[in-house]
Length: 280
Image 1 (cartoon, rainbow, N blue to C red):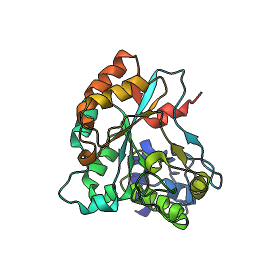
Image 2: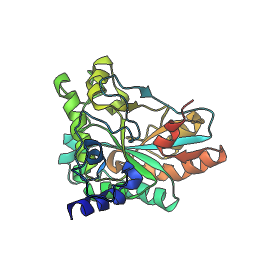
Image 3: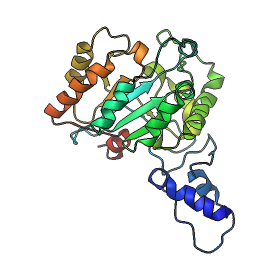
Image 4: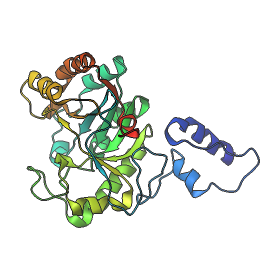
C-alpha cells in the first residue's frame, strides 16, 4: 500500500518533477533522488534537483541573468508578490491583484511569479491558484522582502548571517504548494553584491533580474507603466511587474495594453523557464 501511494504521488506531479516510473516489482525504500522529486517530500534546502528549472551547481555562486536569447521573439512576464512585515500587519489593504490572475488565465498567458514567503502565508488560496495553473510557475522572492545588501532603497537589511536561511526557508514554504516550482531567485530591489550571491551558493539557484522595469509600484496611472514596458521591451526581455494591488494598483489596467503592444511587436509571452532554456 505504501508503494502504491508513492506511485500515485509521483504520477500526479509528473509534469513538475519528472518523477520516474517505479519498477513493477516490490522495491526497497525510495532513493534520495526519488524522494526529493515527490511533491510531498521536503528536499534539503542546500540541495537543488537538477530537473527543476533554474537549478545550478550547489557550492558555486549563482549566475545572474537579466534576459534570454535575443534571437527568439519571446518575452517573460514576471510578477513580484512582495510582502514585508509592515505590509503583513496592514490587514485593511489587499496585496493581491486578482484581476491580473483572471486576465492571464482568461487569455491563456504564461507568467512567472516571484513570491515571498510571507505573501504565500497570507494568501495561501491565491498561491494555490497560481500553483494549479500549468501556464504559471513559482519562483523565490525572499521570505519577507528584506534587503540582502546595505542601502537598498528603504528596505530593512537582513543580517549577513541570515541570508542563506532566509532564501532556504522561502523555498520550503513555496514547495508545499506544488505546481511548477523553480530554483529562480530574485533579490528585493534587484540589490545584490558578491556577499549576497555567495550566500545563495549552497542553494543551487539562478538569480533573475530583468531588463524591463515597469515602474508599477506606486504608479499613479496605468499609461506610464504601459509606456515604460513597451519602450524598453525587445526579444528575450524579462519584464518586471507586481501583483500587489495596494502598492501597485494600476498594473491590472496596464496589463491589457501591454499584451496588445507585445502582440503588435510580434513578441509572445512564455514562462521564464522557456525563455531561459535556450539562452543564446
